[in-house]
Amino acid sequence: MLEKVFSGGKTEQKVIENIKRHIKILCSASDCFKKALVERDKDQMLCIPDLEREGDVVRREIISNIYEGAFLPFLRPNICRFVEIVDEAFDVMEDAALEFEYLDSESDREMEEDCIRIADINLKMCEMLLIAFEALFRKEDLREKNLAIRIYEKKVDEIKLDLIKRLRKREVKDFWEGKILSDFISYITHVSDVIEDASDYLYIMNVSLR
Amino acid sequence: MKIEEIMIKKIESVEADAPVYNAIEKMVDKRLRSLLVNPRDEKDVYGVVTVRDIVFKILGKNLNPSKIKVEEIASKPVICINKDMEIEHVISLMNKFNIARVFIHEGKEIIGVVSLLDVMAAALIERAKGGSVA
Image (cartoon, rainbow over all chains, first blue to last red; front, top):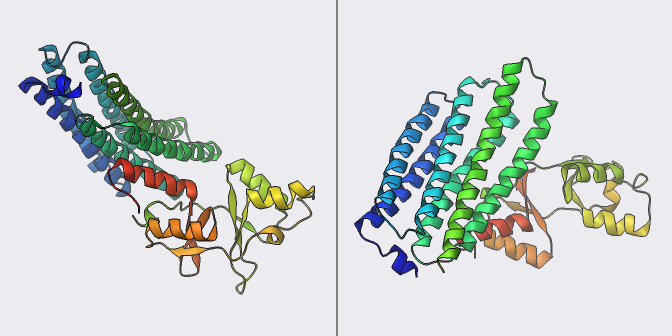
């Protein structure tokens, strides 16, 4: 079945390659985000909006190719939705990057370490999403890949719970300081949720194609 | 894969002479299944107290956890390994000693802990990547 569906012509191959490119850009953005956090470098964080724009260009190309007739009609909405979810991950990461710009650089060390751990897991999740997407075309069962992504997401959830607990005890000097820190944590922990959604969608596609 | 890559660096501990009730409170609050027991003095060693110890040695026998010290039910010394140890060796070690967690040390300091659940998660992720820990 998969061979028939994906054996496609040039347009299908182009879409597949572009989706891989799209996910690879997300991996680069996650990597850049993590490095900027580790180095506390606000300038380096500017790579995120750049990569988000690059991702947008690729997304538009994918959607155009699909509307031009790539893939069988029943598959098109699923592929488009998957690409849109990956794009949402870019948006959330960009939101986090924008908050980082205004974040007080003297936030406590423990909180910073947790954020770096989350950024590291987000990167690993992106890499696993790419592995899962590539596996889809090798007719492999995505169950194990999907489980690995869920394990990562659970780890982020655990860190998030702990972080929020500590955040509530933290003394906030003014409204904006509190809001920016709260939004920043909310965005970086949401990235993993979105990647998990993308992985679930990929798994559903995998099951529906059996 | 080395154990350092999957170890949990945040370790919750309890004092050896604290009542077991303190340990119970900490475990419930932080949803933990074990706590590191700090050495009493420089000559003493680290220990570990688990939910298992509390249920079987205290609550199951209807003893008062407020009147018993942690060190009375803790296991000592803890099984410690080096952070460079490969996961497959850790699995063998856990199997051999029938333990659910091992601690990671650097010199005299305990720097991390790895439970069976962490090992399972790491093994599953490696499988998903196409590799294995064994």
